[in-house]
Length: 609
Image 1: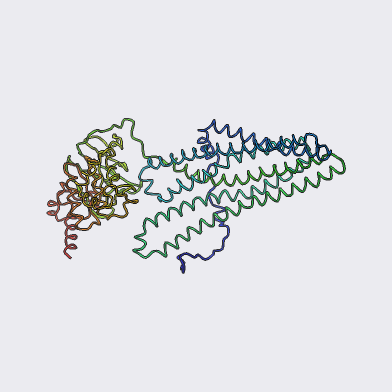
Image 2: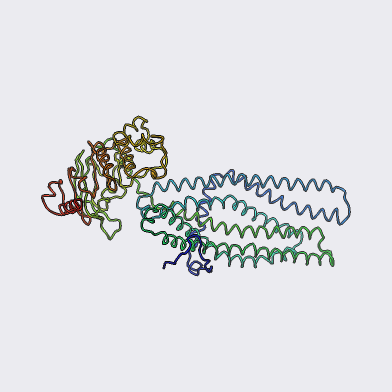
């Protein structure tokens, strides 16, 4: 239900309460051990440096334990006994301990940052590489912004955790063990009293982490959903404003933000209980040691003042690593949630690999044949049914039919973005499944309805057709595509920098650049998918001239709604509900007075009006 919004920049404060669905039914990390193991595999690539980090951690922990011990013993020797012989030497020794401790802390932090950044670099590179190995069908089902969130937010979450948490965890474990050992040596009774807080801490941490593990996972999911929505809304601004959907989008944004805020709020609230709990236990431990230790020192002399001072310091060192471990466990849960989302993408099934026997083709004549081809995106719904046709080299074949008839699907099968469910597609008599995808697509050129232009110069965008082309070849291609004229009038000509997707130039100019790119590639098979739609009449004339030059001598597949653009095609296939219902030239199909004839008459009458 939409809520009325009076001020788009002011949201009324909602009641914030734990979402029972989130707490009870939210997904915990599916396999924490497996995720940690996979992260360790990345860290282990710098195993030698990691060992040095652990050595520095052990050294800093040992020096951290030695400092309070020396201080406590010095109190008994110099202050209680009122003997200052060697006091200066003790101060220098104590200064050296803390100085060396600082050096060890710096080195472990410096080296660990290098390890973590290398790890994250490799993780991000693998994820980006995986994106280019996934099939088109994967991106058809996912929000692009949500996928971007995995490359940015989720990996950055892992990065910040690795920078600090690994050292902190190892340091806390070593400090904890060392502290307990020394405390037992000095006074078993005071040690037992100090350890009273452990069961309370364990029960409290179990209660907290059982909730934060769910909420951090939910927080990362909601963040990804929000990023996907924002990316879509920014990309679709024209549609939003055209249909006056601003208030709806703001309300939808608020709902998604509320979900993120709710999960993030309670994740932070529950995790915030940890330092409060540890503070309370730390103060309780301090009171127990000072109270009981003072009584023992006064009444029985079982412990000295120096030992009490040591225990006070060690009790803090005992609770501090427990506190750090508790906090880092929360941070670790958040990082695991992010890493798990990254690994989910890395584990996605890649585009089916080429068969081992698949070959490369150096040249193609351009003969293409469909033999009893059927295809379905889902097993229970056929999109194409028993498609049969043959195109000779250099011929132009056009596909027409209503929306959803299967025209674009045929193009996706030719390019092997998808593979036919049954039947076979042949290029020069070779089954395309026996040809390497990269090799097959290298002989194809594309001019689509929405050609994507990358951020960069016009020259670079045209050169995507053939990366080793010279500047002269780029300009010659632009001239053949009728693009040279408008390029020359731009402020920096061919060196004019385009923003993402060519914002700043018209749709027609984008098409002329995409035709330039295809001319430069000089393919033997050409794919034209609605190449002249949404273009003004004058620009369409230029595009049609450029397409004629581009299509000369090439096997061309044309998808078009405007029938006047395909009347010179060698063969027109009329599709409806995934089947070829008519086949022939423009004139032949008009004479049959069938489906194509009706389409033509409808368009002709609409144009006349």
